[in-house]
Amino acid sequence: MRRQAARLLRPKSRTFRGGSPQAVAMLRRCERSCAGYLAHPDPSRGGPPAALVAALGGLLYALRPDEPDAVRQDAVPLDAVPLDELLGAVAPALDAGGAPERELALALTEAAVALRPRSKGAWRLRGRALEESGRLSEAIVAHERYAALDGAEPRCLLRPQVLREQRELLDEAAGLLPDVAEAAGGSGSGPGRVFAAAVAGGRPLPEVRDAFTAHLTAALAAHGAAHPDVARLAVLHGRHRRLLALDPAPDGHLADARPLGVHELRGRLEGRTVCVLTGEVEPPAGAYDVVVRCDELPASVTGPVDVHATRAGSRGGWTTRAAIRIVLDESPRPGPWAEAIRSLAPGAQGRVGDAGLRRPLSDPSLCDEQQWGETPSTPFVVLRLLDFLDVSPRIGLRTAAPLSRTLRAPELDWLRARAQDCDQTRITLR
Image (cartoon, rainbow, N blue to C red):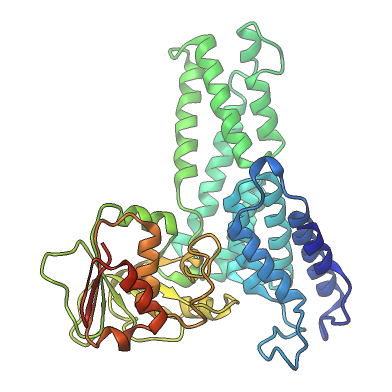
């Protein structure tokens, strides 16, 4: 890992032509932050998460591609900021939950908002990174900047209000029974003082949350639940937990839809039978709990569908209502996928698959299989993902055209080797 990071930091002859010295310097600082994180993993945590490593690799490659321009025609323009890759590394960093990852997210979002000050995604993720780091006042400003760019919709204005309430209740709670350790016969560095210091010092969110719980526990032990300050502390603790459970600022590109991750998809499918359909074909009546339709939706389908799996380059059926819409894209860069997400019809989907569901076959945190190439068929991607999740008791595929015309030969071979039942237009995996 250290050798890879050192190689990425070696000076190259290529520079960001046309970019300002400030922009170049900021991107180079991002490089150093990414490479430094990869070069010094925390051994106690088993190394960085695979999703974060993949995202950072994509960012570093976008900043310093190895191939000459003549060979790599799709290279990122050297005077352009790789914003999709920059922001694509932030969410995995925050999801990792550690202090080094929070610092990395802060560095990446600082660069993003400085280089692209009118980017909605940059300000939204900047606000989230500041929240996780305990810098609530700065997070409020970031979310307000995001809300202003998003047209000041009420749902975007909610987050600053939530953070203000969170900050006010923490300030109030920190002033209640700060000397609870002394009252219990302890020392001055007990839970009350630790919690107050965490709030005053703007410590990261996990520290404040745990310190709040420890303070309430000590106060209950020292004074009992009937004490008015303990009762108030318990109310504030409950409100704080409810505020933390609220969704973060929505992505303005998703209209009224909410992102859906791998773990939530697994939970929704657990114990339910799934039928995957392509073309003008219908599932057996009442035989399956969930129906997944792939690619273009037939003209006969006008009502809501359970799940619509489609491609970033397609637009067929995007106006038909779907409870879940998953947009697939095997491109190494997330740009085409992000553009497709922005093109979704507002109100046509309840949930949208997030970046973790963009390319499940090659994603190192999911199937991690590179042998399927750059254009695997949509039904195969869905079936392989369902097989990987391993929570559905029955999975079937039904096609209008013969399977040999719907799936590529390696895909069909893989499915037939695992099928319980198979004919010309139907496969049952389990």
